[in-house]
Length: 367
Ligand SMILES: Cc1cc2nc3c(=O)[nH]c(=O)nc-3n(C[C@H](O)[C@H](O)[C@H](O)COP(=O)(O)O)c2cc1C
Image (tube, rainbow, N blue to C red; front, side, top):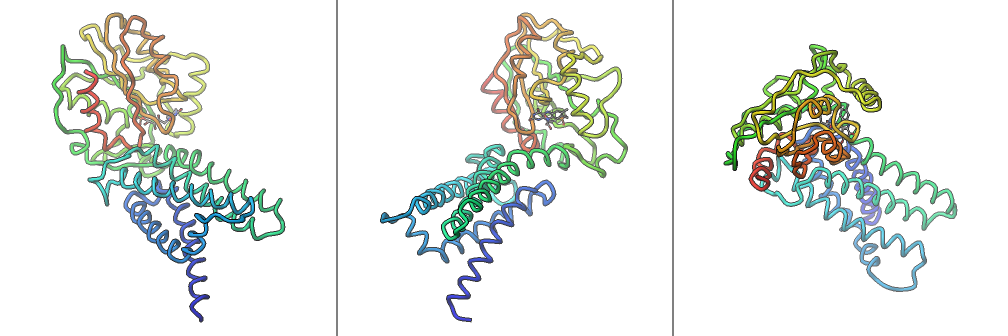
């Protein structure tokens, strides 16, 4: 085969590989972290190959000249894609646990997912524009590009969070995750109060093997995300800790069923029965809660409304699957009148096992 043909075939293979890798990276819930990081390296190796093979076309992107409107759009997309890939590369290293644990710039998982979505969308647009320029069926090409971009955005912003919530099981070493530098607390020690699904759910005995739905195994034991965060706070400050525990019916084992029960509770303003927690002996409460339907779970509402918070300081830590802290802070302010509510720290559920240092720093800054 002549050299030109080999280069062309290599170019096509590399392009296909890059799209496949990008898509596989989106289902990292199933591939796991190590494979995800190695595939990330493979992507960037392919990118170098792509740049070398397509160097003439890429250089033409920066040249002025008599270009058609679609060529100019294609050039802008190529430049944006390049910028997005560089940003994704930095954020990949920032969130890396295995290959670049020492690199801590832009270490936000949310940002990483947004950048990956931007790269996937721009990559679809980039490939689509090449087809658009060549084809005579412009309308069909435009429709396919629009559908491809919409699908790419849906994969990044809807499918990834969905898979995370429904299929993810994280195994951690409990003492490694929880222990860390201590924080000297100004004033009397706070009480940490948390609510989590584990302990308040009728899990089937083999739930971890069956679905793992958004659960954590700490040294083989089922543990809630929020519980782990509460344990980190309690380890850092050396303070008491209480779990909000349902007295009545527990949440169903299935994640989706819990989501729908929680939705009904929110809409009906339900206040499920909980065991009494006495906060009267504490000036400060650190409330750790998961975001449910963009706000606090109703058992947390029952806790807040069942206690007198006037004159107390309340620190908030929220954990979530993508939506920050929603309306939870405003809702908490309404349910705990007279309390001095401090700004919330919101932690993406994936980041929890590595959050001990961040928790310590946050406690030092806020207290
Ligand atoms: C019923 C329910 C509703 C949820 N709603 C949201 C939501 O609106 N936004 C979000 O980002 N995450 C949502 N999540 C994800 C949880 O906030 C996240 O997985 C959290 O880390 C779970 O903590 P836990 O393991 O301590 O229960 C929801 C989870 C459940 C079970």
